[in-house]
Length: 256
Image (tube, rainbow, N blue to C red; front, top):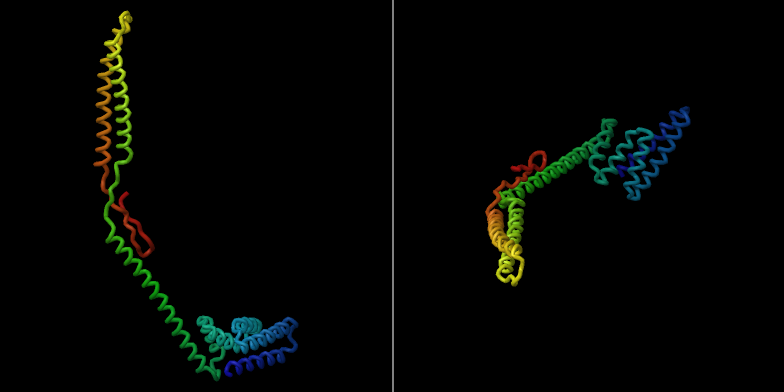
């Protein structure tokens, strides 16, 4: 009933304004007519419980006329829709324009309630953000306490290169030993009438190939063994980068 009373007062204000300015321009009359239609539409929507539509109509009527009484309607509908900030702004505007209105006590009471509700919501949001931040800090602290401080960094590709070269030398040495043994056997089993120079060449070449092959195999074996030992015992310990949450966001620290 209280809202309907204010709506009636607003209609009377529109009618009075239209009568006083009967000689005003046609555009002014058009705005008043449009405001009346918007006001009537808002009244119907409010009565039918269509608050979103009512709020839009009352806002259009206020934009066209600037009537402070419409601020009460805007505030009331916004209040019903739990749009506390909008309702508070409209109530304060109405009370500022109508400081001696008969409903001043009621409006002031709603202003106090809305301010308390807005402040409570802001505090709840702030507490939620603080709790979320604290949980993130605690989680980071748990991860830091559980993780190792250093990690083993391997020696890189060096050992594998050494093993590869040693393996190639080992195979090459074995091939030379095989060729040397073949030459020596060829000398021992030379057929009668074989060329002396060829037999002499193989007799001289066989031992040299065998000796060189044995030496190369030794070098290759040493390379393979050395590479394996390097791979197993090489490397170093390196500090793991530390991730923490600071005042400006996530921080990463470590030695690289």
